[in-house]
Image (cartoon, rainbow, N blue to C red):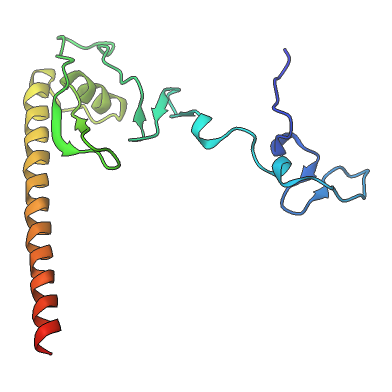
Length: 164
């Protein structure tokens, strides 16, 4: 089995990129490596990140890129796999919002984490609906808080600036 090691990969170099000294015990020379050879040749945007379950991770939200919507072994009833769009905007985007987990995703997560001992599959839809509703209400409260505090800050600044 041959490995395709990118040329200049510091991980497979005999030179320690931090000290530029050879790690080979037979050599006493220092390396004349260029800066390029000290850095990983794979650009951060090209790196793929996987979780402990071997699932590809979406770097925008640190969640599996293809969430598990399959029924778990031993699952008694099928659960909906529909996802609901959130009203909460994704940071760094103009008009995208988050998607809430489906009841099946929620159940799979509980099972995977070993937290499903007293959870009934029949309750998954209601629990997800409560979860989504609580997130939406909390987001509205955050917006109210920010609005109040921004108005208060500008009022305070205006008052302080003109009267002191």
